[in-house]
Structures are given as structure tokens and as C-alpha cells.
Length: 480
Image (cartoon, rainbow, N blue to C red; front, side, top):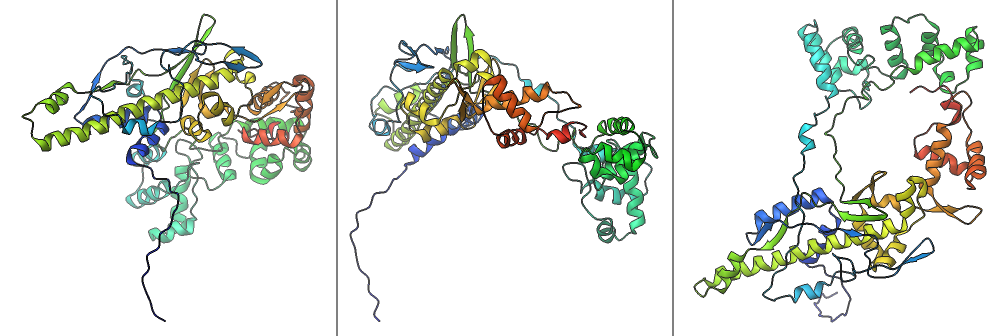
């Protein structure tokens, strides 16, 4: 069988993303803090870019250049100050052809802001806190080595997941020596740390409180499973005490800490800065970008003059032209990113006007498609611009994606968002009798009777699990 080379002509369609287009898409996805960092990096790398200050502008919900239908009412709006042209998909080809002599600039408002981050102290790490106590305790060098090994192998709850035999084997010591050090560490602050399971953690805390031999200690040591199932009558029968005695003991257990590491952070705190804010002025809701830390970008006049100077060497002019093209594209990409973010945010707030007035209970079902049609963008673009972006509202800080939610229709035909249903469930549970908590079916009945919302018991259970709320059997006398 002979091998041969052949040429074949084939017609195919292929999408090619230029570096400039890739950069524009990347900028669209960045949140405010990430964009600030990219701008600083670009200014450092491109000498053609400069910063100047400029006063910001605001846009109200009513400043829209087209008719907008919200909750059955049509609102006519005037031309938007920052967006005279309708926001459409990026006109990439037009920017490639932009070779004019006038250079665009994009303005950000720059205000003096307090650096709250500098005022925040870093939470103490559990490991460092325990090692500090270890080094101040009366331990031999070998015991300190065992203690360091134990502390270095605690999980995120503050529990020791290694077997005693494994530690002894790794360090070449006896299991008794490991247990001796472990017992001392368990009485460090926080008490119960380095326990091997929940039972041991609670027993250590009870011993520390001088409650060894009490009813609470017996329940934890021998009947933890019955406690988790809230089987009070069975506990009383087995222990030969009254149900009231059991409830008193459980109240003590509820005040113990099952996760000793709860108040100690092992990671740096994460800070969220809003990209957009919405507030009320008179009877009007205003939506605007949060621009305090931004700076205006423009093309340096110095390099324009170099291009026009006949004495400037050709290779220098070629270098400047390359940087000018990159700077122009970067400025326009940022401008487009911010226009798109603002328009999408305005659209979301128009649809969710009841949220602005009433809070979470005013949320309406909303889809990406509805917003995409409203601002004449593709759904994928709306998805990109809302991911990881936060809006500061009178009711708190929310990710823009939070406002996209499925929903239900009440018997009267009113649409209710799933997040609103969750809020109702929270309120119902908050108002229940702690001694007689509502079952999921009861919550479903209350939703139907009080809020005219009909959802199945299993849906209530699903939402309750998503919110981290325990079932009724464990809410009655739960361990925190």
C-alpha cells in the first residue's frame, strides 16, 4: 500500500477571535476591583495612556430612550445622558476602521474614599492561636513536637482526623504519649479543639464546665443519636427521668460549641465592592456606576506631537502607532463594558421596581431573555455582564444574577419569585413556636392560606435545605 500526499480545497465556517476582541470580552466579565487592576497594569505597559479627572454623570430609570413596559404599565423616557445611542452588540469592525486623528477618552469620577481595608484586622488563625498556647505551656521538647503534629493536622472544624496509632508511628512515640498531649490540647482555647468526633468534643466541654456525671453528660456519652432525632420521651424513659429533666439537660448541650474552629479564619477575608448602586432621589430611582476609584483615560498629547514631528525616526513612529491602536481599543472597550453594565443594571431594576420599594418580598420572576430583549443584547452577553457584579441597593448588596429567578403564580394570577417564596418561608419559621415547630406540609399550607402561593411540601423541603434550615424534628431542640 503506497502513501501519497494530496491537496484538498475545503470550505468551512470558523469563528476567529482577534486579540482585541478577546480583550473586550475579558473586560466585560471583570468586576470593579478587577477592572481597576487591569487599568493600572495597562497604564504601566502603555506610555500613550494617561489619566485625567472628570466629574461623573448619573442616569435615572426614567432616562431611557425607548418605551419600557413594567408590571403592565408603559413608561416613556427621555434620552439617557451616558447612552444616547442604543446599546447593541459591540461594533468591532467599526473600531478596527477607526483611524481618525481624534482620540477618544473615557471618564470616571475620582473621589477621595476612606481605605476601610487598612482599618480591618486580620482574624487570628486557629493554628497560630493553638501554637501560641502550646509554646507557653509546660511541655517537654518531645511533647511539644507531638503537639505541633496534632495542631498541624486539624480540619476546618477544629477536629483531629488522624488515628492516634498513625501519629505515634510517624513520630516514633507511644500511643499513651500522644493521648496525654492530645488531652491537654483539648482543654486549650477553644475548649474541645482536636477532638476526634462530636461526642468527644461535647464531653470535653462538659468536663471543662464541671458537669461530669450529670444528665447532660450521660445523654452526650450514651444517647447522642436519640438526641439528634429529638426523641425526648425515649430519652426520659431510658434514663429514668422526666421529659422536663431531659429538656433542661438539652438546653445545656445547646450552648456548647460543636465546631471549635468556627470563630477562627484560615483564609484572608474576601471583600466585595459594588459595581453599581441604586438610590432614590425624591420619587425617582437613580442607577449609576460606582466610579469613585476610577480614572479617566486619554491619549497623551506628547505622543501625538511625536507622530506629527518630521524629525521623529520611522521606527519610533511605528512603535507609537502600535501603542496608539492598543490604547484606543482599550479605552473604547472599557467604555462599551461600562455602558453595557449600566444598561443591563437599569433594565433589571426596572423589572424589579417592586423590590426597590418593598424588599425581597417584592421580587418578580425574571429571565435573562427578558433583559436581553429589553436592552437589545444577546443572552450570553447579559450573563457575562451580570456574573460577579454587585449592586448596592437600599436593601443590601446583591449580585446582579440574584435578580434572575424562576417563580410561581398565585391564585390571583400575580407572579411571585422563588426568592420571595424563600423569604416567606424564613418569616414563617422565625415566627413559629420553638417547642412546636412547623412541618414542611404546615409551611406549605400557611403559604397557600396567607400568601396565596401553592407549592408542594417537597418544594418547601428543597428551599429549606437550600437556606440551611433544619427540619422541624431538629429545630425543636437543636444543637447549635
